[in-house]
Amino acid sequence: MQFVDIRELPARALVLTDGWHRLEKAGDGFSGAGVDVLLQREGEGTKVLLNAQTPVRAVALRWDCDLTEPVRLMGDHWERAYGDMAWHGIVPDRYYPWYVLMNDGRVTHGYGVMTGCNAFCHFLVTGDSIDLVLDVRCGGEGVRLGSRTLHAATIVARRGSEGESAFSAGRALCRMMCPAPRLPAAPVYGSNNWYYAYGNSSHAEILGDTALLSELTEGLENRPFMVIDDGWQVEHNDLYNGGPWDRGNADFPDMAQLAGEIRARGARPGIWMRPLFYHQEQYRPLILLNGVGRGDTPCLDPTIPEAMQIVREDVARIAAWGYTLIKHDFSTFDLLGRWGREQAMFGVTGGGWTFHDQSVTTAEVVLQLYRTIREAAGSAYIIGCNTFSHLSAGLFELERTGDDTSGRDWRRTKKYGVNTVAFRAIQHDTFYAADGDCVGLTNDVPWELNRQWLTLLARSGTPLFVSADPKAMGAEQKKAVREAYAIASQPQPLGEPLDWMDNTCPKLWKFGADTVQFRWTDESAVESDF
Image (tube, rainbow, N blue to C red; front, side):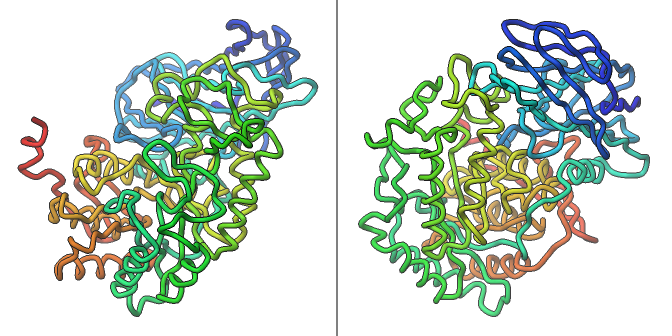
């Protein structure tokens, strides 16, 4: 299989302004239509630099290639995975956000961009070319760079070698794309009440969950996290679950006291928040009002300094209360009006709107938000949920890498959980600690299936969170969770899906020297479809 060194000058370049325009080669780059694109080699990568006297929406670079033999391709998602990650043949119009792996049965080559880039980048692969498209819009319209030069992205390429697995090659590419990940000091595990409580919780119930967690982790040196999910905030109902984040509701009267009581019972306090969602009238001047497809979700505009000051104060306050893990959620949808599964089909956002500051790209806006949260949190761990994977890497210790699992519907856990752990395992400890989401341990999900999901998370080396409904915790369940927590509290070899190139829900896994086969489907699965 041909290796295409995309760090070299491409054959063609186009720019999207009022339409697509082909650029002419000019030295180490391309020029035309009021736009200059410079490719500058630096270390293992090549910088893509952009100057423009006109609003620019995107730049496309094309490298010629000749893929005549059968190949399989695998890429990433913009944010969370939605149960659809897979290896497959050439699909010319399929987006590969951030990177793409290419395997011919002998070697696996990798192409990508460095994490923390200032553009939303995706690859397209045909039998004749590899294209890189850099979306540099501000919201849904062209960015107005003025006199500044935008470092849009840094391109990297890795030549595979015979004898290495596609899994090892993918992991090596991730290390190349993110040379300085920010990782937890020890494995992260514990309890999150969402998948049995679903927001119906209280101060007393959290302490009950903490007591159970402490019982099941007695004697473990690396202490677990007790994460309070959605439902503690002062305004919480079916229509609204946003700020203010300065106090709890009647069921959570003192958030600082609760953090202290969690700690006193032997666990580390964690908490959920949705930092951008504010609907109150006094915040109207700071709200992003002209987004498309955003429904009734008013959110703070990160390009307005006063809005970012609110986020900074909220996160710093929560950290000061004593919470040492802060999970922030919904920012991708709140900012851009689309879930990741929709972005995979239609692009990261629609047209016809911009942020308040039109001189910055959407990727720069997102990075500004993430950096503000990171700085305000101090020493607390950050876990991003509904956040952009490639922009989270190097800033957050943990990332929720897939859509929600479930304590009610096993099919969600099988589809989203198993697929996510398998196909994003290459990002674990290379980008961040990759959290495939919780075990929803309830009486609504067959224990035999949840037991296997619990085993996979514990032995995979990735974070393990359990939503344990007390009514479902018999002696057998307690014994299994206690054993899983003991495993998850210590570093483990990264679990490798051995059949991931042929199965989107891998059942054959390698854990160190052990190979384990799972059975993810029970007899009731067919019946439940009708």
